[in-house]
Each structure stands twice: as structure tokens, then as C-alpha cells.
Length: 346
Image (cartoon, rainbow, N blue to C red; front, side, top):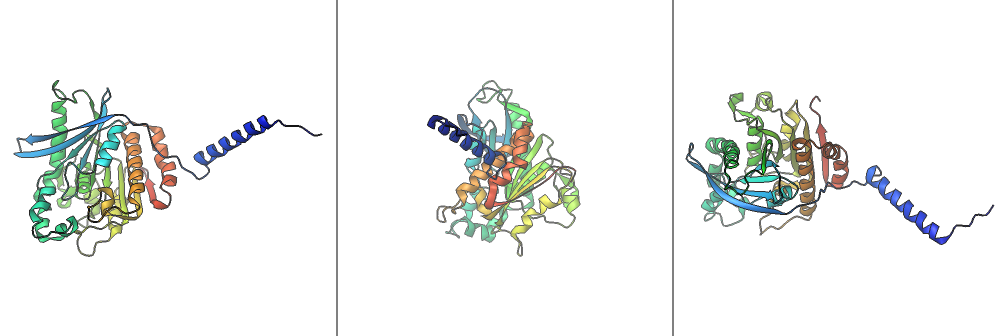
């Protein structure tokens, strides 16, 4: 029997078929959907906070949503020679998706250190960091100052939140605090998370921080890794790259050594992205005289999406975000890198 199908019905069936194919690809056919919640308007404010107890100034730049409500708080610790002005691609992105992002500047290991040595090293920041003078930025004192800056900043935020004249009064949710950091800042982040110094005797853990993002973690400086990492019990999102080395790394260090914290931390959810061809500066930006790598723009998108999903999963309890992290993210990453994760009891 011959059945006649009208042209209009053929077009409708064709559109339905295309729609079904698109849904199949997005949900299980090999094509991932990016994690991209809608953005909202943001603003920034900067301040120089004074810790009278330590006679120390802690400069901050705060990225925040302009909408009403209380928002989770994410603090960020820069790498050696950085400042509160760095990593803006993260702070502005997180704020636009519902977080108050507080970027700290750590005096003594910040950009002023690079200016002090620039006359003897007129090249880029990498040349300056290689200089012996720059090594004064990494001392026992600066290692200690940084996590204390973080805890002080949380104290100050809580104090200011009671001040009705403060522009952000009533906008911060202190039950949901995260911390991120890059390089030296990743070391700071691990210390706040529970990593210990001095064979386990020195503890900077701040229990108000519920989860953390660790970008380019320095390899451990000690042999007893259980004593170093054994007290870390909060979820961590680690990131590194196959070319992730730094001018100040100890002689003989390898990029692969930066995954050691992920491998050795137990008893909590852990995630690791290793970007293919990713170097140490992909997480913070580039010097003007070197310019970006062709892969930087895409890697920045992946860093933004995955860290946001991590915050949403562990600070907001968003099960869809957690599902995306453990499922779709690996597909979204594709050939840009390798993704691994382990659950708390693994």
C-alpha cells in the first residue's frame, strides 16, 4: 500500500529527528554540555585592611554580585610576586555566578618584591624570580604570614558584616566559605586546608573553610607525607599541567611532582585536572613580552567552568553540579587534558 506524506509533515519529522539527535549527543552521545549558569551584574571594591595584632596590612580586592541576598564567600591567594589585581578572570567569573570573591595581597611575597629586584633583572618576571634576591619572598616568615592573612581576612569580613555602613553588609554567607590559590598561594591554600609543617607540629587549618581549589601545588618539602597531608579532610580541586614548572622550583623538580598532594591526600573527595601542554602561568595570565599561548583561552574557560561547578557542588550542595563534575566535565575537557577523581572512601 502506498502512503502519501505531505511536504509539511516531512519537514516536521526532519526537525524532530534533528532535535532528538542533538539531545542524544548532549546527554550520552559523546558531546558534553558546558557548565554555564547565567551571569549577573557585578562590581568591585578595594581596601587595605589593618591587622593590628600583627602590625600588618592586608590589601584586598572584592568581586561581588550586585543582586540581593547572602552569597557564599571564596577567598583567593596569589602566587609569588602577585597582587590582589591578578586572577581577575576568576574573581569576576565567580562573582557573576553568585559568589563574593575576595582576592588577597600578601605583603612580603607580592609584586613589590619583583619591583625591588627589577633594576638588576630588567627582563620579565621569570628572570626576576630566578634571581637570588627574589628568594627572600619565600621564607619561613612569608610562609607563616600568608595563612594568617587568610584567617584574618575572614575575621575582618565577619566584623564588617555587622557594620551597616559597609557596602557589602548582609551579603555574605559565612557558613559557606571556600579558598583558592595558585603556586605559593596553593601552598597557602593547603595550609589552611590542614597541611602541616615541621613534621606535623605546625598547624594553620581554619575550619571555616569548607573546600578549596589548589592550582599548581608545590611539591612537598619533606618525606613524611602522611604527617604533611594526613589532617586534610575537606574536598579539594587540584589543577596542574604537563609543563607546569616554575623558575623557583628546586633543582630536579618535575611537572608531575605537582600531583603528589592529590595522590597522597586521603579521606576526602579529590579531583585533578592535568592540562596537556599547560604550564605554570596558564592559571594566572601572561607577561606582556611573552603573550598568551594558543591554548590559554580554552583552558581559562575550562578552569572557570570546573571551579564554579566545584564551588556549587560543595558550597551550595548542588547535586547537578556534582554530577556534571564527575560526568560531563571529562567530556568537556576532551583532548585539553586528563581528568581524575576519587571519592572520600577510596
